[in-house]
Amino acid sequence: MDAATRRWRAALFLFMLASGTGMASWVARTPAVRDGLDVSTGAMGLVLFGLSTGSMAGVTASGPLVRRRGGRATILGGVLLIVSGLLVVAAGTVLSQAAVVFGGLALFGGGMGMSEVAFNIEGAAVESVIGRPVLPVLHGCFSLGTVVGALLGMALTAAAFPVGWHLTLVAVLIAAAGTRAVLALPHGTGKEDVPAAGAGRGGGGHLHVWRDRQLVLIGVIVLAMAFAEGAANDWLPLLMVDGYHVSATAGSLTFLVFAASMTLGRLAGGPFLERFGRVTIVRISGLTAALGLVVVVVAPSPWMAGAATVLWGLGASLGFPVTVSAAGDHPRDAAARVAAVSTAGYGAFLVGPPALGFLADHIGLRLTMTVVLALVAVATALAGALDTGPDHDATGAQAAPATP
Image 1 (cartoon, rainbow, N blue to C red):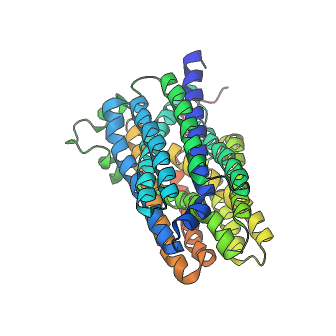
Image 2 (image 1 turned 120 degrees about the vertical axis):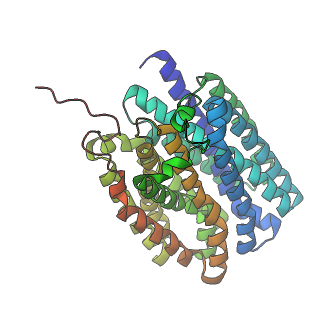
Image 3 (image 1 turned 90 degrees about the vertical axis):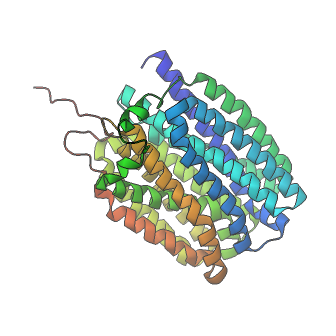
């Protein structure tokens, strides 16, 4: 690997670390934000809908932006939105204005969504250059950032540090890290590939790729696994606080356990992926996540439920990056396919928070997680769609001919 490629990969790792820290900083303080806004769980679901709608708007705009401007410019726009969104959320929390927090989350989600497609396209491009899995480690850096953010959130929650100042400090750190990362990215990734893939299709963008039945199934897997991850990101601290009657600090600690498990699974998953292949890994991941979710729903004690989040995190860790990598395994439409399935994944964030919140108002958050369990079961059953055939290795790259 040459020096330019190493800088490229390192820049993506840095950006993902920073964005993961920002996401977990918000998640860890959701109980405090809800209490500060003085809203119910269902109303909090409506506030979280700002994050969902912003994410979908960002990810929908990202594909065309990458095609016109390239990944670097798109990620820069995402950084600006993430930072401004956190600052607005901080202000809304201080002012106790749910509408302002909703608007800040929409900006924050827009930045995350805008960056999502771009960094997946960048990561898939690095994979094609070096011939090894990159996306699992890339998403592992995001998960590592969530560990950092969760630790910080837990400590500041225990110290009763004001949420507004906490999110403001995180915004400053993301601005610094994001700027450094963007400056190290190459120009034009995705800008040349995507238009070529869509040439002669009447300007239909990446929608033509959905004619591929296999990609449709891959999109369903991405949506289900993103839902499994997003449900924990949105509701796990509140699930522990409301469902098991633990303190807000303990709720943040449980999310930290989940985030650490996600990080371990992603950072250590590369060798297993290369050895066993995508289909086997996603099937095992789905079964592991399902077991963890069952225990979280039925556990008689918060200690058992907290321990089960290890299984939930490990099971959810590889599903999204491995499936996105499979979508990008195409000789012509790689970038368009990655953009399409990333959009499907963010669909989970659109319907997830408000739907789970409304349902939880009637049956409680613990029982609501059975919806997530059912989706994980669907993803596990469809894992065979990730088989790229005998001419490809476990990473999706063209297999080398056997040596005599």
